[in-house]
Length: 416
Ligand code: ACO
Image (tube, rainbow, N blue to C red; front, side):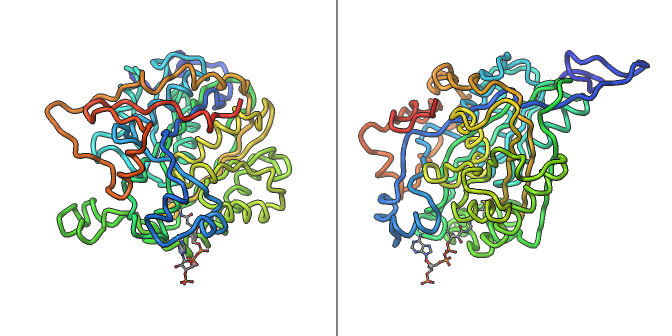
């Protein structure tokens, strides 16, 4: 953003003013999501590793997940979700002051994926940076956006969660490859003196879990080499049981802390929107909060775990499906590698109808992420997925044309 004194464009500077400053609240004014067209079903996975549809559904609740096509990237998916959120907010992309993109699968180590998204959405003004808090990243970004808005630093903040996890999975490890999928979600938070909006934040980090979910190689401690590749250290590794224990212990307590900080009780929350990792974890949260499952939003059956994208995808779908109304209190809550967890309790004020035509209004094929000059990318599709990505009907334009895929098939529309 370009304001020298840190004042949001359009906001009045308080220096020298004697009038009491009114409290600025951060309201969610836009929401959107994008998922790739290609489906990887449990049946597909049965042909790749020693697993079964019955095991995956009963232990995780996942039936299928999405896989990004060769021409898609974290930035391209994030850009589509972002433009849909901006469309719902009814603002121009250039009104955004700050772009926060949460991901554990950035397109590159540098530049940030947020910088690529800034260009792709046609914004010239915003500061842009990535947020690294794994599956809790969107909630961490959301909390940061709230702080920027309440302090007067920004008027409109775009928060994105975008992940392309299927390129970082070991398709011989049945403990991890069945869990994750690709996609992106986004929200616009806007400053307003009206009551409501984001009410209370709770964020935790417990580093004793640092090596429970991790990606060993590629960073400064273990730079990428033929040896790290041969050892498979460029894939996500996870101690499932330990992670499961952390998640069931932490999700409910983090959500509860955020709800109480907002001066509310769980019964005042009409919908919890938890990180979609495992239906059993979500059931444990409901039990921990002594609430029925219909107060928990779930779509883990269709997308699996999309890490930082999971909460904003779920939030956009919940609102578009009519599960959230103006005046409702909702709580978004996530956990992830680190171990991290985060929750924000929100008093929803936007008209849910605003997001419902975003999928038609923002077409993936119209959104372009610029590629480097004189650089040929290798085919990014993991060999284990090559067959499903070559299925008839799969959109596969040349690699030098990074344009997100076709809208998803009619069998999986966003509910209206
Ligand atoms: N298909 C069939 N059998 C399997 C599979 C599979 N895909 N995976 C494991 N098994 C086997 C195991 O080998 C084991 O067999 P054994 O008893 O002969 O040794 C048996 O099933 C039970 O394995 P568990 O690991 O005990 O299975 P569990 O019920 O714990 O479920 C799971 C495993 C689904 C991974 C669960 O532990 C879990 O969901 N953990 C949390 C994962 C998570 O949420 N991660 C995301 C974190 S967010 C982030 O930041 C990335």
